[in-house]
Image 1 (spheres, rainbow, N blue to C red):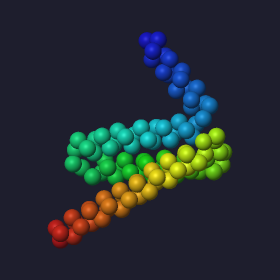
Image 2: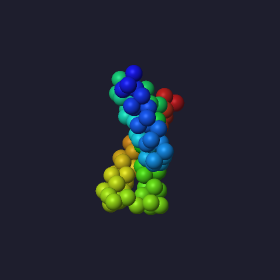
Image 3: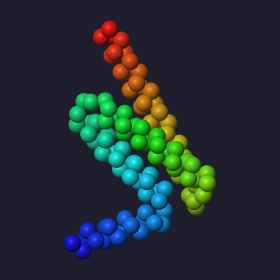
Image 4: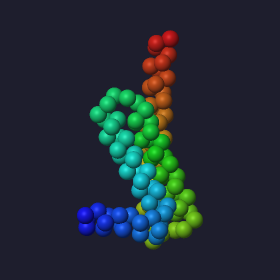
Length: 106
């Protein structure tokens, strides 16, 4: 029980100290979970949701760094831009694949 209380207190302190980072962490954790589900099941909605969460988290990181720069601003911005590019490429490729599949059935 002590371990759960420690994690709960850590979560509360993190949410009060830096709420945007907590939201970004939750979004990226959900993206990883959706990617895991997408690897297990062949359904595309989980993969699209994963990429959408990644785009949202990357945009949030870029906005947060533009408003309040951190000591490692350049590294954080570079990582967010790379995540954004990979996510947009994945979304475009997935939507193109879905469109090709849909047109073959018509």
